[in-house]
Length: 216
Image (cartoon, rainbow, N blue to C red):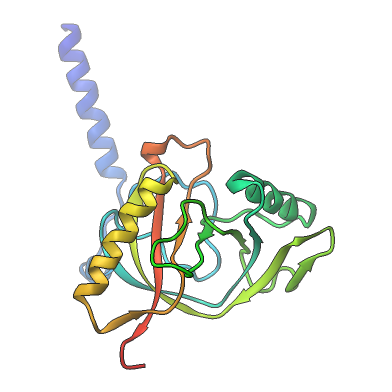
């Protein structure tokens, strides 16, 4: 048998094996899945906090609700890398498991957020972990309890930099202008789902703005 023919049969055998390995899904299950936003293909490096929704589809705007959660936050000092290391040392010495995403926030003192985030936060896996308040070993790190929050969100792919943030933020501004039934209720944020070890073209993030119904 010619090599090309052998390769073809081997490929068909692999495809058939994969198809047979895929579990059957009932019509009801298919309908339930169809109602859920499609999760983007991504490199998953850590678990989501308890009750958190999956990241949204790339370039699609969604209204999302996040449950009450606990996080450790540090304000800008030494740039993004300086903030990251302070938070990493915090969870390391307290034996807290790393989760994804990492939250980066901007102040809402102006309509155009600064280039670099003002603060960064690591999210705890559960509100049962840790205790609110300043870290006794580093008072710059403060553990906070965040109430349930509703946001308008857009999924993005690319580096965690100003260009990617601007691309998402401007699309959210345009969406809000077209949907007067929602109004901003806080500063924008980026949720980054990948570590620096993942190539930029694989990284997934979401840019979000807290919102409330216009009549509230």
